[in-house]
Amino acid sequence: MRTRSKIATLASAALVSTWLVAGATPASAAGPCGGGYSRVGVYAIPASGARTGTLEVYYNSRSGKNCALTYGYGSYAGRVSRKAAAIGLGGATAWAGADNGMFAHYAGPVYVSARGKCIDVRGQVATGVRHLNRVHCG
Image: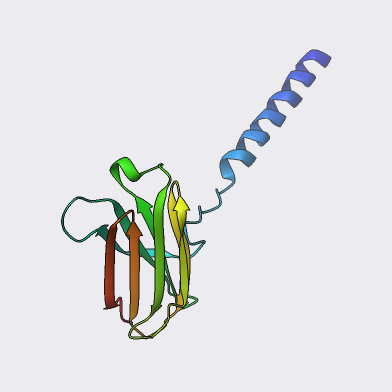
């Protein structure tokens, strides 16, 4: 009788443990800019010719901030090379955020508060450059 009671207790504990683990909801993974950002644009660097990288733009509707990152592509992915990302308000004379250096994987993230406004973004990998003016307005 004691053996049956111990087995029943262990089985109940195992069932409760399984239920607790299965019932737990996983934390939502934060993207490269942090939680709450959605990707709103992906651009090849440069716009034409041999591609060296990718410029990605994200937006957080809660904070009103945009974010940009530049990744290497092809032989530049994972290889130390010049990578740069810059972001600012559309038409501004200076970048609100910029990251430029010799990186293996990416430059950024860089941010600008731009609720209801357009942004300018720039990405560079090696000698390839992509510059977009007054995009993602809103």
